[in-house]
Length: 423
Image (cartoon, rainbow, N blue to C red):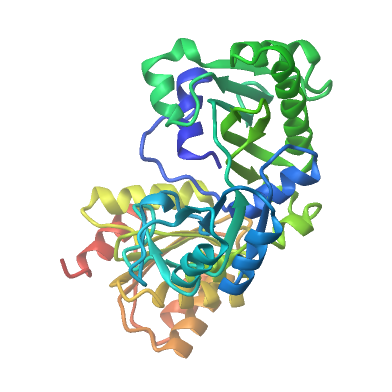
């Protein structure tokens, strides 16, 4: 999944395949903290500032001394952006602090760790800070932007860069597209030296710094391939006054299909900042995304799930979730899916829409009956079933004695689910 800035850049330069703005993208993705991304870059030889990670204020002070640098930057480790302008529940303003005094770093850490940080990208209650990164603070002489992404239209990796870094790259792409450069990489051959040289030149690096930038980009490409990334975004990719070229901030996204061979990386997943329902669904093997509506959805197939949500909205309703149970669903998974949906207090009705091909309708019916009997379902349940063993499944539901509302087709099901919601 692309970051918002890289999505915008890709839309301008490469061209988006999406036909509808605002479309929900079914995607689970690993989100790493800044210190974790920097650790990965270090492993591949990429130059980053010195840093250590602390979980308490005493260690934060100790590490700021051990780094033996002239100035320290202390950063709260949360997934949300806008840390620098955030506010802690302790009253401290700003999740990024600079100091030359280790004791002051300790004081800042005491007001960060164990407190919630609220930014423009967090929920209203903020997110709890459990770790802080203690890092070398460096002056930046010039900022550029560099990224590598896996692009469907190019059938492989694309390097993108701009000499206008350190700012919202989406704005750069929109207002000054001539400052955006790209190189399509043949994944079977790897990135070529002439491509690296062109990119470094286009980003404005000169002399030894040009050679250093090329080497950093080569290592970033090795990282991109080595960890099965879908995106490596460096902003800023910068020069320091003493002539060094460093990667100051990084966002790395991964191909979840490669989790089986990137177990060490995926083990770093921090679920503390994720929605508990989405985490639970992921562990069960369900494709679930929480939304803002009040009509719970249980569907098989991503396309049918999208269509179901569209029809609900067409009839004036709002879906509470995207939930694709998948072709290998079992009765137990159906029951678990119901438990996840009904754990949301906003849900006022549930729509089950199944078109059984791989999925057996009897499996769905069995799961529905078990879930309703065990959870004492208190919201209206509308069920539309078609496909494999549908007659047997309908008979199971009809003879269950449960107050299930049946529908003849999707349109009928959507209308009935909306009618039973109190607006």
